[in-house]
Image (cartoon, rainbow, N blue to C red):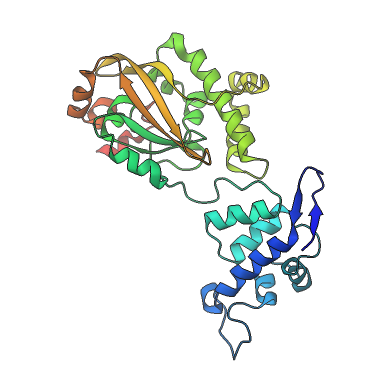
Length: 301
């Protein structure tokens, strides 16, 4: 095996390991699994090299060189094409990117709650809790969280991010007292900057969100230019609920190992608030408030 230095000079790509991984993934795929005819008798258990090359829109010679640990280090678009051709799952795709010396892509797969956070959520029936991504996309909320901050899950694209609504839909800010708005704006943007840097230049989801917000107004653009970075952990905040009024809560979080998702849970200063959250219907609480509920009231009937 030989190692080829990346253009940055900071790391090295083990092309031999990259080739071995590609070969192992090719061997496990049948022609039928990728929509190719089985044809006659085959000397190899999986796809042929030329078939993978065709699926990835690469030359057969170049793909052969990659499997043999030779040739030029593949670019990010080439790695994407290989991952699709070889039908790699999210973990395998991330591994392939790492082997090729590139940051693993975010956002290529549908957002699903990670199993560890799912298990914790199931044990927090008496605590308002929700899972969000590093771009503040709400993946899931329990009943009390929906009552506390409004139903926020279920949207797609950049509209799934709380930041999109915070900076483009003024009514969203009704969730917090006016005197706290500047604080939340700064914290949201500094957290987003950390997430975008962690995702790397290959990520298109975070880049699209930032680009849209930069065009949305001066407030986000000014905060983005400040280059402040702060990842949210424990936070004391005031939440304005349409029925229960202004509530003081401590917001805690647990972040997954890949930093892609975090579990948030809210502990009200007043313990009597939790039973009241259980007793309320989120549709009744948020029906006439288009901001924090993100306009989902129409789906409640």
